[in-house]
Amino acid sequence: MAKKQVTLIFPQHLIKEPVIYMMSKECDILPNIRRARVTETSGEVTLELEGSEEKLKQAVAFLEKKGVKVEPVGGDVVS
Amino acid sequence: MSYVLGLKCRECGRLYPKDVIFVCEYCFGSVEVDYDYDAIRKTFTKAALATRPKSLWRYRELLPIDGEPRVGHASGFTPFFKAEALGKVLGVRELYIKDDSVSHPTLSFKDRVVSVALTKAMEFGFDTVACASTGNLANSVSALGARAGLRRFIFIPADLEAGKVVSSLIYKPTVVAVEGTYDEVNRLCAEIGAKYNWAFVNINIRPYYAEGSKTYGYEIAEQLGWRAPQHIVIPAAGGSLITKIAKSLKELKMLGFISDAGTRLYAAQATGCAPIVTTIKERADIVRPVKPNTIAKSLAIGNPADGYYATKAVLESGGAAESASDDEIVEAMQLLAQTEGIFTETAGGVTVAAARKLIEQGVIPRDESIVLAITGNGLKTQEPLMNRLGAPTRIKPTLSSFEQQLQETLAACQPRSA
Image (tube, rainbow over all chains, first blue to last red; front, top):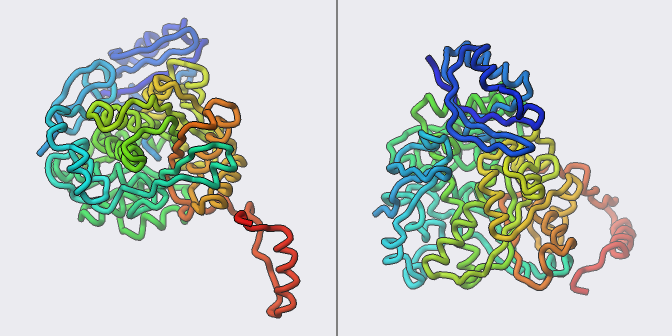
């Protein structure tokens, strides 16, 4: 099993949707939320995803298709 | 001797030993270096500093190394001066420039952070250093890494212009051109950084690397006669420089070197990549990543690692933020060159243009002390200026042709001192 640490950024229209739960069920991924900031206009959730390499790729694709931004926890590194 | 107590999570405050750790194991927040200020107080005095060489290492106690510096002995302590002519144009009384466009050896403030990162990497026993960069950071890792005798890997997006790679290739690092978007390069480097036992300066060595930026703040205060200015305008890419200038001033105040001037910090970004400026202006809690589209490539970070902390530092200081369009950036680069004789890169244009707007808006008062952070040199990236600066005056090889042109030129251009 592989692990991936990511920050998810939710636009306003997705805040009410249980996107992480849906991703977890659909892609067979174990999410472990470590930190979150949610306001009325946006949400930021930092978490660890655990699953096979293939399932992790599927999970990221699922989230991005939903409109969630999936970013590495350390931010951009190309400067 | 080391003055480092360890690392501390910026989110949950959890403490870690000084090791190669860059995110908190619990909350995945970023970590930063924590110092023993009581011990520092004993040796870090104005009298001691007066006898030390003029480089960034004169502030050694406040930098996260255990032994002696390995590289960067000539880096830092760059020029700081009152910018009378630019001040006159901007209509302000006390304007200063901190000029890292002439930083040794690679002409940008990255020489500060890389000097610290490579020294720390060698202390940790790494023989290989790496970074992902399209410009200044790549040059600095390539050059200072060569001096230190380290193996170097530089990751760049494959479509980067050839001219931008030359000033890294000359030092013979391994330059890896990744066929992918900037996002893909970012993700790949995060994966490589996690897998390989290399010192990736802006990933796993980041907490130590970032501390080097504090020297920019220490120097401003020292060169101003141990006084903090009332306003500092700072360009923002990842946002780290803003947070570290804030930290440097807090440390100097805590150690009794300066009194609290209530220095206000201002973030400057290009309009085509302004996630931090937007967050500050909207007083938002979350920094929303953007797709960069600007000539200011050295500031083009769409998802800034320190965006949240930079926002906090600016707002806590009572400062503000402003962005500049590509045209405004070029205009400001020309203004700085024509008034103060400094050829800065686009990031410097962003700083000057943003400062000008903040002054005109009345956000920065005209009668208070203002410092502009100029962090890089224009000679390295001349592309944004091509076809924007006019052409040389062309003449026939005769005295009459010269004199005819001279009259026209003289009519159009008067010396400022006249």
